[in-house]
Image 1 (cartoon, rainbow, N blue to C red):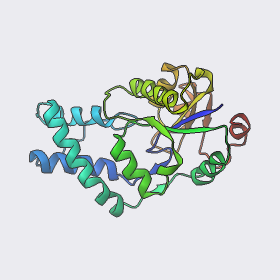
Image 2: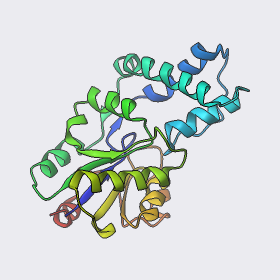
Image 3: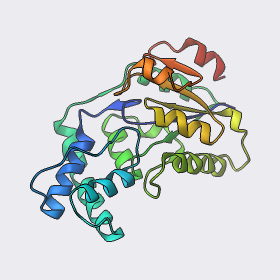
Length: 224
């Protein structure tokens, strides 16, 4: 049984910078930061790690209370940014998810650094949330590999049985997606629909490296 765990940003959707904009606006409004220092990497990382590093970069102690304050402000701002930043579903995704949902033997899940509520905001905005049965999210983890472990555990709970690592596929647009797939013994599909070019992704040795998911014929044959 194929178990397909999808990343969100740059893989399923592009939000036009809504997430980054909402996080930085939250930092400014919640903590009175006058100017954002653009020194924190967002690519492939968890919201929890991004929030911690943003606080540190601006001289704010990343206590649990401050991290909670930041993320509450972020989640309040995110729906507004999604409406104003445009964005789009990545090429081929709507058709691919529709085809996969029609197959009774496929599990569709998420493996994302987004916190669960943020993931629901983003995918709900683009009409994709209801495709996914379960997943791992960035609420509790700084490390993407730990999110992968949680995602696999959630699939087990959803199916109410053990699963074979070889049945799990991680589909994402960053080197960290490939890395976290390997951390749980899964196969990796890297797609160059985010910030990382195809050649860079291929250098991390995913099982498949694709420009996008508009015509994944070989994958659809494997995912039966």
